[in-house]
Length: 225
Ligand SMILES: *[C@@H]1O[C@H](CO)[C@@H](O)[C@H](O)[C@H]1NC(C)=O
Image (cartoon, rainbow, N blue to C red; front, side, top):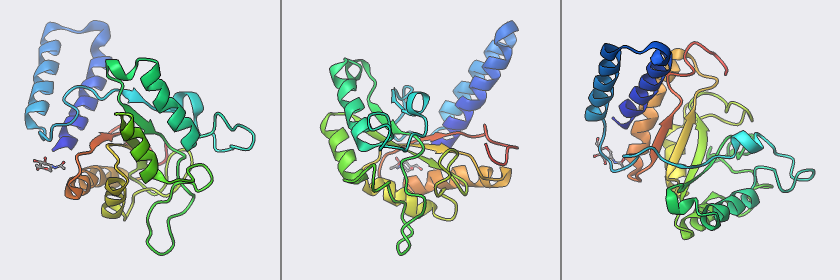
């Protein structure tokens, strides 16, 4: 049911943007009613009662994977730890920016051949996601990771979650992940509509409370991004 909240907030936001230029009172009331309906219908698992706040690298660091040329700016555990420390020292954490979320481009290009688990880039995350999660938690912050519901991730084109929902949800739970940004590239409309709720149930089955951030229905009728 947490999925309903995400969908409704997405639809609500889109509706609001569409009508913002000339919004009538009736429309405004309808939107408020929709948002109440959705929230009332949502899962109460204690998470995302207010909009989750934190930091994601994408707008600044994109998919920089070349640490030889750009050691400070590549998507790596050095960058993530440095930023987590800045959230504390800069006073951001104190006003609520608590999620440190790694966007696309953290993975190896393929899954583990034997276990089929997702693998963090060995070069850029040499100590692994579990220990990075521990470090982020030791600062009192929360740990988020990017994934994609389809065949491949949007930018890096690393392995998507397709056919591995339970395995990936459990891997994230094992790593101490608190937030999943689930992107929607390389999936058909039917896969999106089936996949987003199904991955939500897979997250729930892990027993770990994890915020589920869905890029849904944004990617509908777009076969890639
Ligand atoms: C799983 O879902 C149930 C409701 O369906 C909810 O009460 C519970 O808090 C959820 N657990 C997690 C870990 O999200």
